[in-house]
Length: 375
Image 1: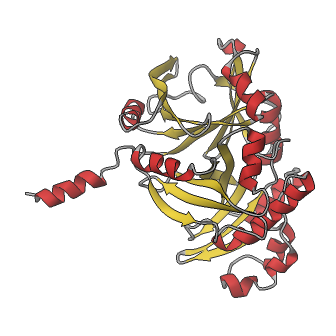
Image 2 (image 1 turned 120 degrees about the vertical axis):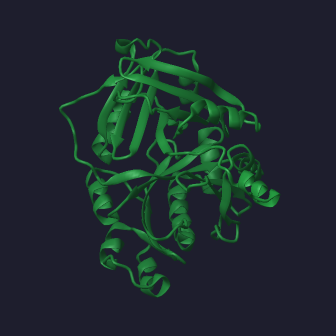
Image 3 (image 1 turned 90 degrees about the vertical axis):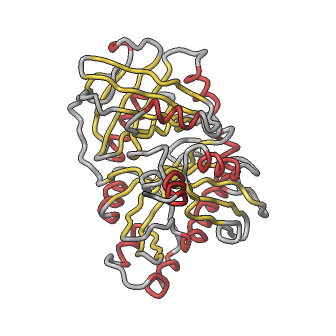
């Protein structure tokens, strides 16, 4: 028979919100058809599903695209005077929902709301001829939300309300595999609030912390904490500004997004050189670091499998931790507003987030800010 201490330990170690990973990320945008085409052409996503007036949804259109385990949805309001149109007016194109795959959407909602989360969608069932999906949702920072998606009893292309979307234009994959992490930008003094939210409401752990000494340049600084769920499938770094001589990248984001939101999405690949080469060939623009970054790369990170010349040509950064190394690169903002961007990341054992690259990366961001007149 287990002791009381062992029983208590078991109770505290139970994951009350088991997550199976990121189901999809939904963007509210000004023109969903054009946004979907951009992500097909530039990033190699394939058409998946469509929803709109033709499928019985009268107030909006949505296009879903997929590449391996990455699913993005772009939604546009068909008329003014609603939450989708207002979101785009206020923020520009941006992430509305980070939807998480669960085995029980009702339980996920119950466990999080009883711990203090504000409901966004009460548990509900969506049905069509392909089966049923249970969804629920909670509110986060700014106007961002988490939806919980239970799809074990569904066999359709995406979800009820959508139909399969097929086009004659099907560009090849660029090797993007899944969401590695999503980064939030929150306001002054708000990071600990959202760290506590993910810890208390969702059962996440703080696995890494960076202060303004870790993430700073001559001009600006920020602070960040990384929250991870129990199995490590879902990770959310949370950034807030720190005092600096000039405006930080987080402050610039908050100004142009008009509030808190998702700053960037990190997408994993198994061959970053091939992926970034393909993306650049399709017009995706990346931040560049000075060539001096590569002069002592071997001394800083040790032996790596990749040719340093190829990394230098593409602008790919490298960092090492106790478990291996990672390679990463960041796009320029993909909107006209300097808000959302993407990270391409390849992990070769490393579980960290590129601390050794922070200075070079943020100086590259500041050069872009200066060119926009926002530093």
